[in-house]
Length: 338
Ligand SMILES: C[S@@+](CC[C@H](N)C(=O)[O-])C[C@H]1O[C@@H](n2cnc3c(N)ncnc32)[C@H](O)[C@@H]1O
Image 1 (cartoon, rainbow, N blue to C red):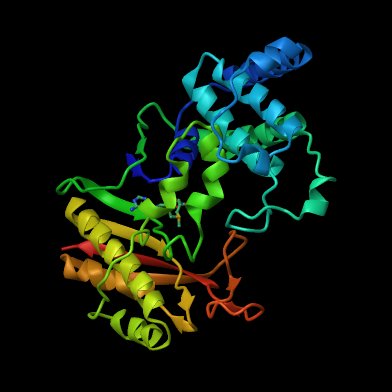
Image 2: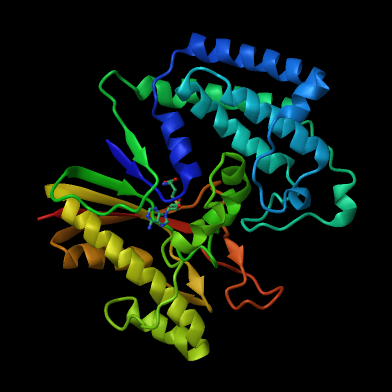
C-alpha cells in the first residue's frame, strides 16, 4: 500500500500508525526515555551541551524553560535505538510542541496568545509529553496494531503523487477543501512541530499545497464555473485564488485516475466550503473530473461532520464579526474506472 502527502508531519503520523512494533519494546523504550530525560535534566552541563534546533523566532513562540525541556526530550528520543519507536514517539512530541508553545489552541493559523496570558503560561512539558505518549500508545494498541499483519507493507512519502499507469485497485483520499491560506492552514498549523522535527522547509509547505500558487486564469468550464463567476462579481482576486485551487485539484485527479486499474475505485472525502457566501460544490467537481477521465460516478454519501477540528464558522466575507456555517457536511464521492 502506498501513501502520499506533502506535509512531512502527516507522513510521520501515518508511518507511526502503519508500522508493526512489539508492545514490550514500546514500553521498554518509554521507561528508558523517562530515565534518560531525568538524568540529563539533572546535569546542567549536559543540558547546555545539546544543540538547540533551528526554529524561526524561537523566543517568540516558546519560553526559555519550555525550550530547555523540549530540547532534552527531542535529544533523548533521537538517542533511542529503534527507528520505528522514534517515529512513534515523535507523534506525542509534536503534540507537546503545540501544547507548550504560545500559539492559540483554537486557531488553525499561527497566532500568539495575549502578552498578559503568557506570564501565567508555564506548562509541564515532560508531564504533558508522557501523558500524550500514553494516549498515543493506547490508540496504537487499540486501533492500529490489530489491523497490521506481516503482509502489511505501507510506504508513505512526503511528495506530490505523480501517477503510475493502472497500478492501484483503489485510491482513498481526503484532499484539502480549499487553498490552505484561506481554509485549513495545514502548513502553518504544523510549522512549529515540523521545525522541531528538523524539517527545514516547514514554512514553505502551504505554498506547495493545492491552491498554494497564484494563477492568472479563471476556471470557466464545468459545475464550478458558475459559483466562481459569482465570486468574481464581488472580488476578482478571490475568484482567481479559488480557481487556482480547482486547477490543482483537477491535475491531481488526472494523476489519480491514470493510476487506478480498470474496474478500480476512487473514494474522496471532502467538504464544500463557502467563499463570499457562495457554496462551492467540490463533491460535484470531483465526480465531474473523474467522469472526464474515464470513470463512472457510482454514488456520493453525505454525512454530518462530527467532532472533527474544522472551521465550521468563519467569515467568508472577511468582515469581522460576520460568521456563517461554512462546512457542516462531509461528502464521500465514489467513482469506478470503466
Ligand atoms: C483534508 S487533509 C487530509 C489529511 C489526511 N490524509 C486524512 O485523511 O486525515 C488534506 C491533506 O492534503 C495534503 N495535501 C495538500 N496538497 C497536496 C498535494 N498537492 N499533494 C499531496 N498532498 C497534499 C495536506 O498536507 C493535508 O495533509
